[in-house]
Image 1: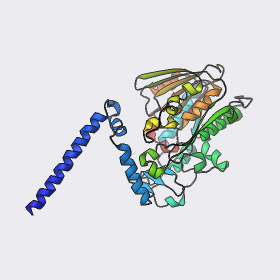
Image 2: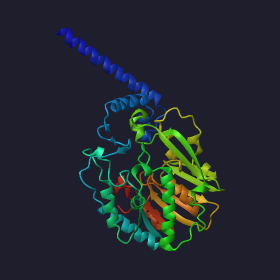
Image 3: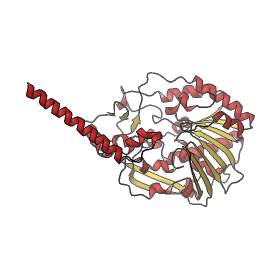
Image 4: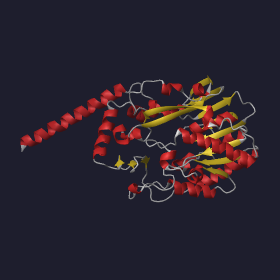
Length: 384
């Protein structure tokens, strides 16, 4: 019996020693560490992280499991990956709606218009029957309640548009990402211009030049992309998919300024050198699971607290602001062709006085674009 406990003690001691050594090696491997985002910094640079994720994902695939990480990720019969949450009903939208009505008053006092954009949830209408019984997010039900409360506020609901066109989840979304495809974002740009022209009798893009996809380069990256959900599961579980880069084949000239955590970036030139960061497509792709290989992030160079776009070729275009999440990045990029200036605010990172910002700045349009999965009070930081 004594020998039995000695073996247990030795095994436990070895495990603790290995765990401590692994932690020390990872801290060294992760240097330099961003102290503002210490957890994500270490997680993103974890030693052998890819191997751990791929091994786990492969085992779950062999077992034909439809969920990973305690139901954080689900996979349906069409191999579409979904993020989920453990909820039992739709979320309370009363505070969001109240703040939107207050924002409408402020925007209109500055002779502007407030328009709400509702991007689609990845479960566009109803989810695949193979996911029956698994946790559900109630994102669409929450978005419906939010929309219902926005009386007298203009709403462009992309869910309705895509369903009317007969599009499915796989038509609209990447399999391995929660975002819509770049092709879908271009359709969203077309629909937004059509909506404004019809609603306010505008003459944006009267020759249908900027909205014509034939006037854009479309470069297909075959079997090259793993989205944000796929990076949680690994390519052996979620697979690798195609990605289409879309950018103008006509002359463009922009200035793009970004601000994030005190750092500032300035770019000037063509759209595919400024609003689309070409670095993402030039590096050798050795690690599909690393966020630096995220093609989707190339548009506007991912999320930042504040950014401004100036279209030097369209000084008489619209002056607008997007209060947005990551869905809007490619949409804003394409929409910049019909604008003179676009300012961009991401409430997840914005740390200045947002009420003062809206009260002191005048825009033709203020677009509030929040995807159904981010319809929480914390996403509406104005007029708390």
